[in-house]
Image (cartoon, rainbow, N blue to C red; front, side):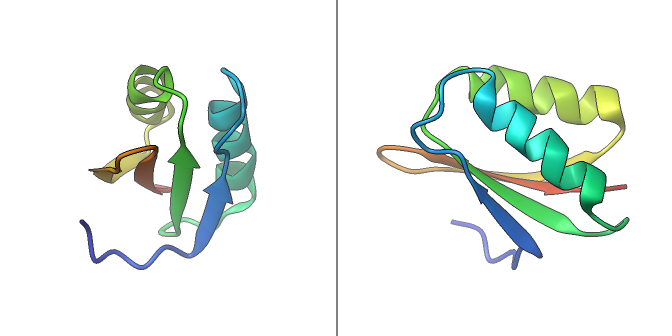
Length: 78
């Protein structure tokens, strides 16, 4: 488990693909550079989609915490 304190959390648990990623993108767009956004998702496709988008968009995936029934992605806006 990470000890990163996010500036905001997007709880997309229960959302179908591509909902979690779209929610994250929306939050990142309104964030300041250096902000850390935590995305909570129980959609397994997020394990592929989020890291790919983060790299393409030029942001940084700081951590991924895998829990029993969801994953927490920590993304820093660059």
